[in-house]
Image 1 (cartoon, rainbow, N blue to C red):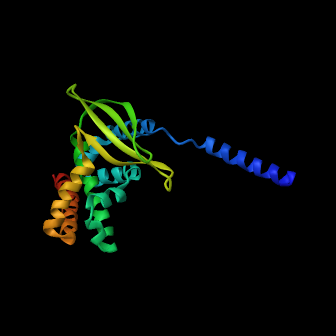
Image 2: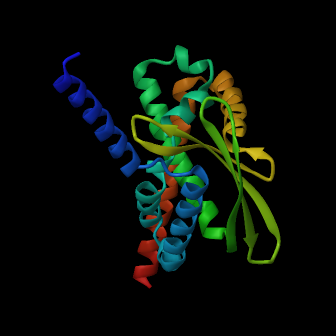
Image 3: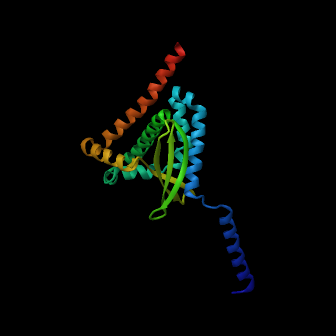
Length: 217
């Protein structure tokens, strides 16, 4: 190899290393700690607004939470073997309805949850680059609860993604898979999707009706 070519290759290698070092991959524990505390501060600052306006709460969750959640991966896992038999259109509709259902569930939980403090206690490495981040949550009544966030590094998004949450030893992902497997077997794919869509719309329509009533008083 000519000297100039060797110098160019070495220089390029050093440049790539320096770029990688300038953009370090955040520790999964730090990611969860920063995310949960940031979300909680914003929620507390807007809690009264969100109680009256579920559309505002949904928009908040879409902007602040959704980018950090592997919704499509979760939806595919939840459908299990039914995913393979679904058409591309059914898959797309299920992912969207599942996403809105997660937002609805998240909204209801946030509105009723009172927390004093949160602290990441342990990060446990798993298989295939996955991690379990254990966080202790102190409720307003002084009792403690353990929440485990299961995350992986999404190379395409260049970011950590949450794919499961375990609270009080109950996995959100496994619980949804069990429930949906039963419903998909009994009702079929289209009926399950339609039921989710109806409930998702009803959640927002109820908020709109309540808001209109409040403004009419």
